[in-house]
Length: 445
Image 1 (cartoon, rainbow, N blue to C red):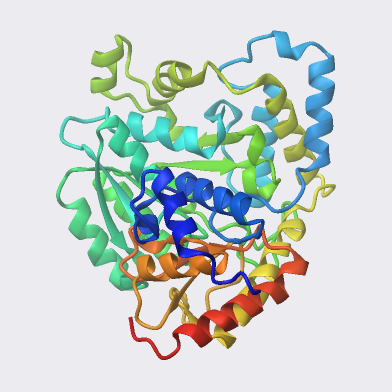
Image 2: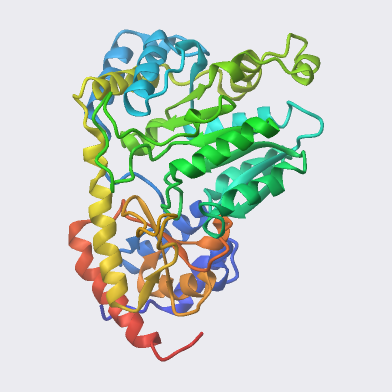
């Protein structure tokens, strides 16, 4: 602890090496840029950070997937191009997985693999921007995963957003009407549970979203990266309620993205599936037909024009790995919800330490007034500081997180991730935050 706070000159020089003038600019850094800064500080000082910045699994990859990939590679799949629409096994067991844990019946032909949720969002946002000349905007439910907005910037798609914490329950309908009535909203994207706040949309809110999406012909992109990770409910038994809440019960104008990164701790293999509601999959858009010289059907153009252009398919062995994990989960052999419940245990401990040392939770309650659940992400702040102010002070105490401002949040603070902390680090976190609070408790800004 004698080396905490860290040397200011060393920290500032490291930030400078990454194109930042000093630690005061860390709030504007990308997540990967911040990770680079922290790693170089660790290397220079020999002091390990308490990492809360990167949303990376903190559990081992599921062995079932690894073994299935190994078997596929030994069988020679590595030399063969994968089917762009997905191997039969991943389509079949993807269909079953959705039925078992979401209680939706989406046909196998409407399921296609993607190179993680990131590629899925990129491909979907690209497609949505090409369906109508008038509809040129993707509406984000903030706070959100910042890279998805960055993707829209890359492809030149207009973005609109609102902070959902200000429009919970009955307030949501009027806010959605306000955006949808412009006639410019092509698609709406949200995660549930929410990254970064961990708030969860209620059935009432999902019904409102679905009903208005149908009314205004807006396509809903439902990011289920944290499927069934609202640990306040006892979920995870295949084909038994309670299931993952979904907008798919209230509209057929939607797409579901299910990533293996967090559910199965399979982030390094970049595997996900995209499930398109069949009515949308079969719908034909004249503008797509004009662009690509065909009948304009959504699903065919999405797969053969957009996804194919991006990667020519998902790694062959990864598809076998995903299929095996989906199958094992459906058969009750892989209790992925129980496995990921570990994140709730970690988050609870981290929050308790923070609250003891002068910090508070930013997004603290859900629409029904219940405290936001413990899980993969959480949000925190100190006094009345901005997220940038807090970040550029915590960095000297060997603690890293990302600014909420980068997520579109209207509230100030930081996003923390519970995944990387180890049991032997809680005492160190307590000591560092106690020293931080001692050093700054009398300072207002």
